[in-house]
Every structure is written in C-alpha cells, then in structure tokens.
Image (cartoon, rainbow, N blue to C red):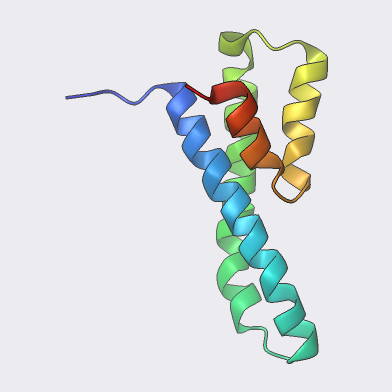
Length: 95
C-alpha cells in the first residue's frame, strides 16, 4: 500500500482550497444579485475548513520544505488571493 506524504496532502488541500474559494466567489454575486443565499451557505463551511487546513499544513510542511520566513509568508498570503493556492501548488510542488 502506498503511503501519502505530507507534501501530497498539502497539494491536495491547496487545490481544494483554491477551488472552494473560486466557487465561493462565484456564489457571492448569486447571493446579492439574485438574493439566493443557498450556494454561499453550502460552500461557506467547506471553504472555511479547507482554509484552516491549508494554513495548518503550510505551517506543518515549512520545515520539511526548508522555507524561509519570506517564502512562508508568501505561501500563507496566497490563500487569500484568488488562484493563489494553485500558483503555490505549481511553483513549489510541481514534479
């Protein structure tokens, strides 16, 4: 059986967090223009959980990846920029 490394877990979480962020951004106009909160309610909690996991695993993987403080702050700040986590996953974890 193949084990999943911390790097692979972080890559998966980075992708899912980025995807949930984009979906939530798409749901926001629906909420305010069409007055339909359903999509924000559905996507809000998973995005919040994935955001927390992203931050937690970024901190956990910092030592293994030998990131300095500047890189670490860049990785953390990418979580608040649309498509930022996709860029981090590509830049630091491409095979």
